[in-house]
Amino acid sequence: MIPAHYAAVANWFQTRDRGGSRVSYSRKEIFARWGHRCCYCDGPAEHLDHVQPVSRGGVDEPRNLVPACSACNLSKADHTLAEWAASF
Image 1 (spheres, one colour):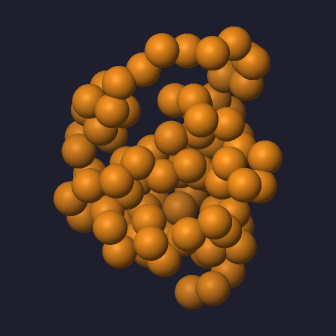
Image 2: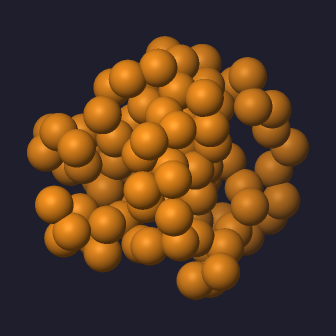
């Protein structure tokens, strides 16, 4: 993972709107927001990743979803961003 990408994702996750209302979204919109690139390594994105895993209290809403390549998403699994980054 490229450190600059980690910082950008961590900053986005911490500063985004934290309102609790359910927002309608499409995969296309989320991929387009990130230029169809993996937010972790800048490779081609094929998956949507929950930055804060749902199993760890994250929500299934656009504010917690980012595009990820298969390798990054499968490697991150159900780890938090900080836990995953510490494994490098």
